[in-house]
Amino acid sequence: MLYRMIHSLRFFAIALISSAFSQIVAAEPITLLFAGSSSTYWNDFPREVAKVVDMKFIGHVGATVIPEIVGRSGSDIRVYLEPGFNKYEYGVKPGQSFLDKIRDEKPPFVVLQTVCRFIMGDDDPTKTGEAHAKAITAYCEAIRSAGGEPIFFEMGWAKTEREAEGRKRLFDLAVKNKIKLFAPCSMAWARVYREKPELALQHPQDNAHPGDAGHFLNLACFYAALTGESPVGKLPRTYPVWPHGKYEADEAKMAAFKPDTYQAKMAKWMFKHMSMRQTATLDDATATYLETVARETTQHVHEQLTMK
Image 1 (cartoon, helix red, strand yellow):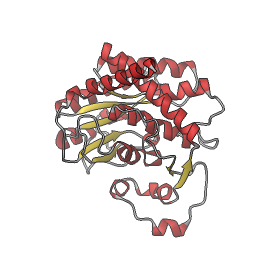
Image 2 (cartoon, rainbow, N blue to C red):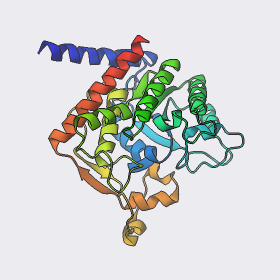
Image 3 (spheres, helix red, strand yellow):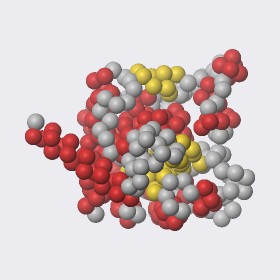
């Protein structure tokens, strides 16, 4: 019982520390802008994050959270810094860059897709990962110059030692950039791999994106990171997901599909996945386990960040 009390008080203290940068309780909607590619937008992830943290966001309790995303499929977000880069698929106006959007629209929170394999050198001409680290640092500086706060979306679904080294580098990068809000999704996945290797976090026909259980775990990490509360028992056990693998689209469903505000801003080819969405259901024991992993992993990371 004493351990539980200490555990709860420690988590509450982390929430207070994390909210130190924003003491004003906002009544107006706040924008949560994601920068990333397919593992970020899969399952309409920004929209689903906004749904679970809506009205509970640290420092903005009572405010509606508006999700947005900028980027393109299949690439490291470092490419937004390449001279003349104009290959965005969603999230920017014609002629506008990611840095322009930050400067002009001043989103209060920007989620940066920080990826283990990218900081290890994949998709980087130098093969050192330095370009990813430099880009993330440049984005953090731009976000703060515009009055916002960067958030790290730690991403990495593989099980290798190289992935583990990537997590260490991403944490060091978070320390360097004084990150207050960190969703440790890859760390949480690694713990589940160790403890419950039989639990499929990815779909057997899709080794690139989070599967149904992995999506739930990521949502739980964001809930813990962005609300400062425990996600245990807070997330719905039945939730929308996109189909995995190859499938034939239902033309009638596609014709009847009416995108919401978030979806309407995305590339039209995504409407196939959106219109064919399904629902996934986790049993309560599995859901509670994943929420507990998310809570404890997020708490541990926040404790480390606040000590640096």
